[in-house]
Length: 322
Ligand code: SF4
Image (cartoon, rainbow, N blue to C red):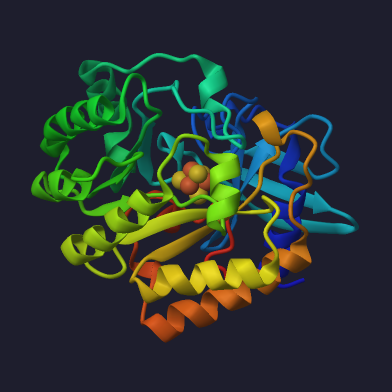
């Protein structure tokens, strides 16, 4: 089985059970993104390829850890040799930090509002980055919204001012105010990700009550002007009820604006519990659309320095999952 087929099948399943030697050093606990608040996740790699799977003792997929990261993945009748990758913070090679682990909004697919977590202090964030400094090449920040969008933006900017000390590329994905791109650019942030989340405005309104779809597009356009083509990203979730034509139109709209789509299979948690994860066939079909659209727009995901396009754990990423 080729890597892309295998990864699509693994993303369809979404989880694995871990057996063999203790694997605690290889388990990432997340407070954002797919798997937030769960038993944690592992990154299984084959050469330069990787996939992130939630740890789930009931999963049909088994990863047997033989020690030191050496592992075999058992999937249907296949035994696939590889490695578990030790995460930095949340994902390999990066200190990816959720600044505020709670949110006043209630996007249906997201667990963060239910976590009722706290806002990390600047000191805590500096200590976290310091703890993994020797094995990360980037810092990425995301955040819920504790009080207001403007207040969160101001706090994240304060955090960034301190993080400049580490002299690493910084990526930021927060819910934006109108001038967020200007403020992040002025601070020296390398890349930004502002998520349109759903493939159509109607689905966005259903999934993300109270958030402003048109503002996201204005902010994405301004970001491309400032940060440049290929340094601006936007998540779109696959499986919120869109059809393939709607997804293709959304992908093309983003790429024609100079934005790299991050096409994320739905993790059915929070208000989406009970929905299905998208099938491997659909993921591969959308991957083909994604590849075509990126090539036509001259966008290269392989140069991403930060965040999900650099990590490539949760999605099929053109150029990375060939
Ligand atoms: S792809 Fe993004 S959400 Fe998934 S593990 Fe990597 S950084 Fe986290």
